[in-house]
Length: 103
Image 1 (spheres, rainbow, N blue to C red):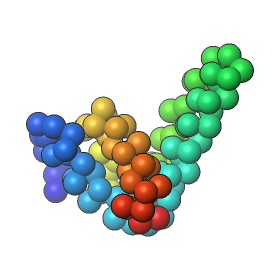
Image 2: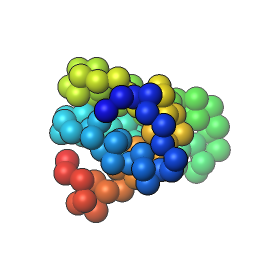
Image 3: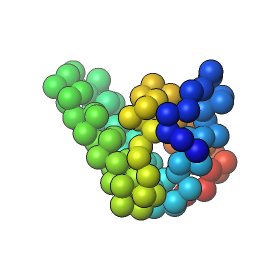
């Protein structure tokens, strides 16, 4: 599927998002990155360490992009669909935790 495809809703986008994450190593790297984002966010809030918020994109995207460029061998959907892609990361994370998407 073409990365420039238009989607009318997140529910239309999510199946495409999952198809772009068929490689288990890529999904695992996304899971690690999203876990780090949640951990850093919790620490930043708990300690009032707001400068940690600058690290969030690095923590999340570095793992995800390694997964895409080296394992999935595709271009991250975030370049064409940044908001849906960010939401997709968290929905896929939840679905992995619930066993709906395999690790």
